[in-house]
Image (cartoon, rainbow, N blue to C red):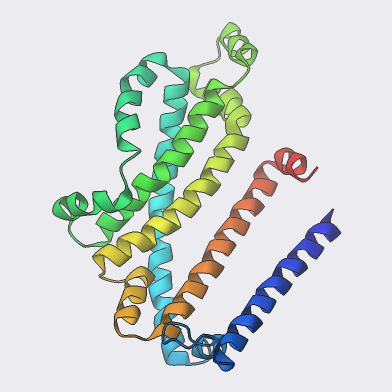
Length: 257
């Protein structure tokens, strides 16, 4: 199984290399001649220029910091809310109508009121990211809790296990696979939302950096930033998969079967 995954990874890397070669050839042969289409060699060269690389990594680090804070806040709130709504019909009836209205609001539409109340500082961006990260986790947690075998819940009630312990010992372990899937979706949503918020608001971050470089017609820097974001997104996804294999080995094994 590991050998098969290794072969798949090698195939994926080979495809990326072939696409890069085709991209380079399209520029060198003049097939595509446009300022917005620099050769990959020009983009890669930036990663060997310490000054430019330092600026790029600094902006990316700020974005990832804001993304992580918003992700943690939104995910924890989503897990807690999903559990409460899953075990309490009254809580579900009270919260669901409002949540159905809120979760369809596009992130860009939230930026103006967020700026009005929170200003342009990191607090505003982190709040927007937390809002976006909340929904995948909350919905997955809710459906996971409501899908738990009722016999498990009734057994816990029969033995008069307190609600807090019931959540910790019965509900969370049973709902963990779906919650983990929600966390993976939430991490991707948090990264995208971070970049979108920075592009709209500016004031730092790799999203604002991309807009600034595009306005200055420095396209190699734009593509270099996109590559950094791609690598960061890939690393985040791999990290979430590693956490799943560590915390839920039985679920990871089923996924690889």
